[in-house]
Structure formats: structure tokens, C-alpha cells
Length: 576
Ligand SMILES: [Zn+2]
Image (cartoon, rainbow, N blue to C red; front, top):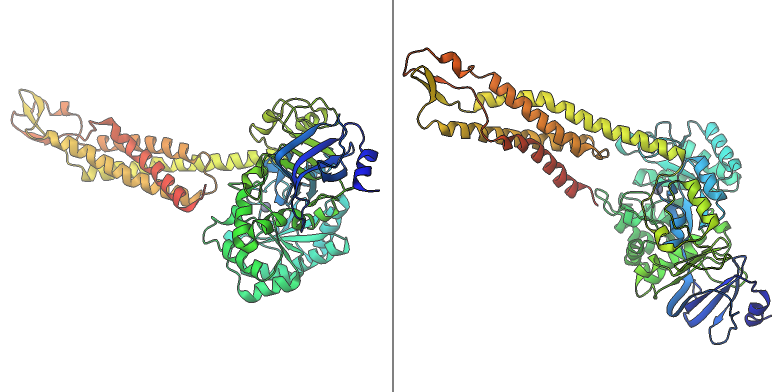
């Protein structure tokens, strides 16, 4: 039976048609003006030239002349807890692999009836108190492995629970404990015995050595520390695949990810596309910036797209999803219609006209075909709701694709709460520390600022001649001291609480104003006392007046300097 016959024979009602210039993936050459017919079950029923393939007239059709049609992107490194699964499909991504989430959240995504294909690693294996359980992954994102025997049990339990690969974290930054070589080895062995593969988070030379020696199947990131050539050769010889995540890591301090990616590509190490979605600076859907970095690392744009299609489709867990990474008849459809050729305009990946995955089709256009999945009109507030919305369908696609990214699952809500508390306590510490600093500043101000000389005249005190300028000097000293203390506060706050900056500006601003008020009042109180007390002394006698401010605006020099310091340091050291 040829494809044409197959089309008429097997297309059931309410399937759909993708039209455009076709690339089937892999080594295939472009085929202009083609159609892909997807049947009701989401399987590709027929592929061929539009002029030759008969298409049932009642099928909804997406794309047309000038459109482009090919396999959708596969993101091999995401953290769905920080976004919304269903937005992946509208962003051109037909399959995702979650590398770190609470077990229950992971199992729920696996059970989702619609949306992109999902593969999950579940919680990240790490040392007790190790990364990421002391930062973003505090609540359920990590599972500790404390001995080779116990590690084997953890792996076996996770595998039985239904996760499809194991992720282990070897992250010693800022003194965090990491699993030993023996434990890492035990994790890999137990996983392989259970028939699943292991991906390691390892960014430094030492940790990459440990991961490769233990026999991990993949590295979850391009390492950040420059890898020596012998280690790169070792990775190549071991057949380890590296998931790119270049865009998420290029701006790390002293990041050598570009150099490492170049060297890995030169050594023939397979590189697959992954964005580390959920990390700072990432966004839902296809990421043309990641493709561009891969292309520049020596793959070229075609190699970059292959890294995000056939290559990623062959990775741990993802290889079990039939149909990913290419378009072929009788396979489940995991493809997209784009408004234009993404090899000419990579931005096109982000704005598909329609995407097919997991037996469903997402489309830009509202459609009355109930077999075609259309997204909900309202912005769902929680995951359960959004899944319901997915099942019910209906409503325009645009509103679905927009809107905020709500947190996902109870574990994440708790993690968010905990991180909010940490952010809030950082701001509180800064605020409270400003008060004694203000007192110190008041003392210094009282010592250094000149005091106006008053003269007793006719029973009252008047300002001595030419002494007005002393008040201005007092203001000036206050402003300068405030700026110095502010810069100090801002710098210290940035160094100490760099990752807890959410409420830091408020702590600095309020602390700065309160600290200034303390300094002002203290400096004034330390002065020689009220002028009134000098009444009655003989005319012509002089005395130093108390310190005071004429321009209240100088109270702001501290908070302004503090905020400026944080702003400048953030611009220098923290990208985006
Ligand atoms: Zn990650």
C-alpha cells in the first residue's frame, strides 16, 4: 500500500492536515509544498506532495504556502515545576524531560492526558544537605544518598515508582556536600540494573571526572569550568552525551561553557539540546538563543536543530517515546507547522501555527473540530485546573499562551513560601542592621561636622556672622557620610544576600531612611543643648550651637547610595 492509498484508507474523521514546505528530520532533504495527514488517534497517516496526495475535504488544515512543516523541538532539560507544561506545545516544544522535581509532581505530569510528551527524573539524588536541597530545591526536589547501599535502595524505589531516568547532583559550590565516588558508582550501577539511565549535574573538572568514572550516561549541562583535553577525550571515549544548556550558563562567573562546547563538538561528543527551563533567564517554549549558541559551537544551524530533534529524541527516557524527532508514516505525530522556514528565521520556532504531540493537536486558531485540541480561554490558576481546561478544550489560543506562570504543585508552593521567607528575612536583617549603623554615623557626624557659633544678644541667641555656611557644611557632611554608609550597606547586602534579592531593595531603602533618622537625631542630641539655655548670659558671649539639618533631602543620600550600589553590582556580576 503506498502512502496515497494509505491516506484515503486510514484517515479517520476529525484528524487534521499540516501543510507547508516539509522537512522530515534527520538527513532528509526539504520537500516543498507538502502535506502531513494526522489521523484522529494522533498518528501520521500519510505524507506527500500537496499536489498528489488526496486530502479529505472535511479535515481542518493548518499552514499552507510559505509555511514550514517539520518535527517539533525536544527539550532534554527542563524544570516544569517553574512553568506550565501546556505552554510548551504552543511554544513549539513537543516533548520535555524534567530533570528535577518532587516525585508526586513528576508522576502527575506523566499522567497528563494531553500536551507535550513528558519524561521525568523525579527528585535529584544528592548528598544529605547537598545541592539543590539548600537552595531552590528545598522541598522535595532532592533525595539524599548517604551510602552505596542506601543509594541503591533509593534508585530502586524511584524506578519502581515510575520515573524514567535518574539525575544525580555533583555540585560542591559554596561548600555543599556531594555524593562520594563510591555512592555515584552505586547509583549508576543500580540504575542500569533497573534498566534506566543516569544523567549527572557536574559543572567542574573534578565532578565531571567523578561522573564519567562512575559511568553516567549523560551530563545534564555543558560544564562551566574549562575542561582539559584529556578529560574531553575521556567523555568522547565513554560515549557520554552532553545536554547543552548553554544559554542558561554562558553568563555564569568565569563560565567556559562556550569553549567547552567547542571542544566537545570537535571531539565528536554528542550534544543534545536542553535549556534548563526554570533557571534564571529561561522561558517557556523553543529557545532560538540556545540553537544559535549550539550552531556557533561548531554544529551549524542544521546540527543545532538535529541536536533538538533526532539527537534529543534518542536520550535517556525520551528514546521510549515513539515518533519524536522525525516525521514518518504510522508513527505518532510530534510535529509543528511554523509560519516560515526556521532555518532562515529561528524565531519561527516560538510561534507555531499548530503543534501535534501525544495524540493531540494544539492550534493557533480556534476550531470547531472536537477531535482537535484547542486550549482554554481563561488563564488557569493551578495545575489541576489547567489540566481540566486542557481536557475540555475550547477558547482562543492566544489568551492561553499569555499570562503569568503560576507555581506548580504543593511542593513548589511550599518551596516558594520558604524562599519568600528567606528573602524577607534577608531584607529584615539589612533593615535592622541599619539602625546601629545610623547611630555610629550620628556619632561620626557630630565629631566631624562644624557647629555654628551663636552669640548672645539682647537676652536671646543669634547666629554669629558668616556662620550660616556651617549649617550648609553640616548638611554636606551628613550627605557624604550617608552616601559612604549607603554604599557600604548596598555592597555588603549584595555580597551576603546575592540570591535572596527579592525584598532586599525595600530593606535597604527603609533601613537607610531609618538609619539616617537615627544619625540625625543622635548627632543633634549630642550637641551642646538648646539655645534657650544660654539666655541670660552676658551679651556678646558666644557658644557652639547644636547640630541640625537644613535640607531634609540629605536624609535620602544613604538609601539612594545603597540602592545604587546594588544596582551597579547586579549589572556587573549578575546577568539578566
Ligand atoms: Zn536543571
